[in-house]
Every structure is written in structure tokens, then in C-alpha cells.
Length: 417
Image 1 (tube, one colour):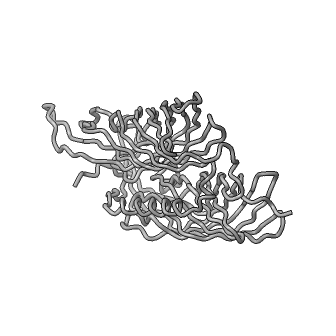
Image 2 (image 1 turned 180 degrees about the vertical axis):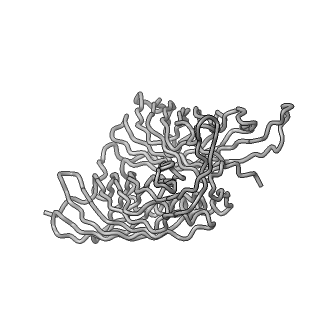
Image 3 (image 1 turned 45 degrees about the horizontal axis):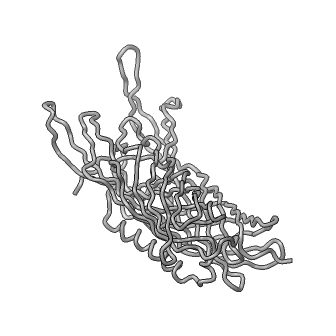
């Protein structure tokens, strides 16, 4: 087993569980099955769904020596996932990718004579979500295109601490073959610095060679019709991400000159109430029913405050413990009352399993939907109960999540007159 080289802060280190891939495969299989089962009339929009895969042309880790620890990459990484593309015109579209990638690296201690000891390969499971504006050049069978936009990233285990955001740009060519769009692309991503700046490991500049394959959209301009809504959700948590904890610790206080003294202190750990934003896809079916799929990027944050016995604040810091993506899949029923329509929703929720957290839960909510011109506005209350985690380390995270949210949608049925 590879070593867990996570820098500890007094809490149990996370371990990589083999069942994690099973949860990922189950979530992907459920989503793809739902897409395959959609009526053809719903899929014949300007929304193309397909697959993307390839490999990295750059190393995952920096080659460097710090604190007598050497890190490097012995091999390049493979990448695979799904791609979603909404075309607004023949030359312009917006693409969202969901890609799984293992960052492979090796770590070893460096002896005073320069030799290495304890060579241990390890990996960090990551999920990349580029959101790219895409422009095509030309009108022939073979079209060049450029793309650019932000990229988000979640990590499945923390053998090192890569950042969660960056910017991507790429260039490629697209051709059509038997109803499929096939598009090889070279993509560059610049990631922000690692979350632990005093021990950077991941390579910030990444170059990838990818191939996208998706079904060509069957209409040149159909603004989502009456069956599909696309939008965005903003969610304000009412509960903290971390369960409250209070404990006593000893701290070191610098004195005059080079002297130090020990003092007793109380440590207060509380969860931070986060603002979460993400995209929404809603498929409308008859009799006031619809199915809603959300993609919510959630950083799990905590506030750590230390007070000395005399009431002096020794330290206070807010930081991100880890981050994940949540995917509620909700059946939704509207009560038609005119221009303001109450609704109820419920269904399973999935998330990328990090820090041994459960990958599934149950969500229910209620709200009202209003209309302003072509825009649907839907404030709501939502509650999620997550399953129990697999290790003691996961118990620090809140299993019950309550939130207020508002959704903004375009497309779907028109308001009743």
C-alpha cells in the first residue's frame, strides 16, 4: 500500500478506499441510463451529449526537493469522462466537461549523501469540470475551433493538496462522421497554486491531448423548446459544513528574545455556512411533472479559533477542509395556480466521495416558481440527509444539510395564462 503523505494537523489522515471507484461508476451509470432512456424528441435539441478522453502531455507533479523530500512523476496520466455542449449558433457553443483523472506522483526521502530512501508512488483522484466557450471557424466538413473558460476541480483523496480552480484554453478540429462529431483538441490549463503553499507538489501548467465524440445536434436553432430547461442555482446553507467541536490544547507563545512559554488554550471548531452555485438541467414530462439534475460544487470549510485562558485570541482561521461535487436527481411536481406555481421535489443525491464521506443521500424540498418574461425564477427550501461515512474521520462533517436556494431557468413550459 502506498503511504499517505498528507501533512497532519492533529486529525486522522484520510485513506483511499477501493470502493470509491464503485460509487463513481454507479453514479455515472445512473446518469447515462437516464439519458439513454429519454424520448428522442427530448434529445433532438441543440444539446449534444457524448464522451471525452485522452491523456496528459505534462507531469502531474513538480520535480523538486523540499525539506529533504523529493517528488516527481514516473508516468503520464489518462483522462476520461462525459461532455455536454449547447449550441447557440452554428459557430458558437458552450461546453461543460466532467472528467476523471488520477494525478500520479512518487515521493521519497533524500539522505545526506544524496541517495533516496522509502520510494513510494501514490495518486490523487481528481474530477475536472471545464466550462468553455467554443467558437468554430469555417463552414466545410472539417472545422477548426478555439475554446476558453474557467475550470473547477475536486479531489478524492489528499495525498497532496492541488487547488480547486484554474483557467483553460484549447485549439482543435472537428469533423462529422455518420451522425457523430469527432473533435481532437489540445488543451492547456493553468491551475492556481496548491492549497498548502509551503509545500507545493502539483504541476500548475497542464497540457492535455483529448478526443471528444458526441452526437451531432439535429436542429440548427431550437432554443430548448418546451421540454428542456437550463439554468443556474444559487444556494445559501443554513447549516455549517463541519460539526462543532471544543477541546483543550497547549500552545507555544514567543516571549522576549528567543524565549518561549507554554500556555493552555481552548480550541473551537465550527462549520462555515457556504454559498454554493451550480448549473441545472430540467426535463419536463406530462402532468406537471419534471426531473431536475443539479451539479453543485461544494467546498467543505471550517473555522478554527483558539482562545487563551485569559480570553486573548491566539489564532482564528477559516480554511477549506476538502471539496466535492453534489448531484441531486429530483422528481418535481408543480401545482398550477397561474403565474405563481408552488412545487415539491424529492429524490436521491450523489456526491464525489472525499475524506471517506458517504457518496449518496436523500433530498426533499419545496418552493414556488414565478415567471418574468422568458425567465423562470424559483426560490425554495431544501433538506438533504447524507449516509454515514466509512471512517471516524468522516464524522466531523455534517450529515444534515438545510439550505435556501433560488433557481433561474430558461426554456420549458410557458406560464399559464
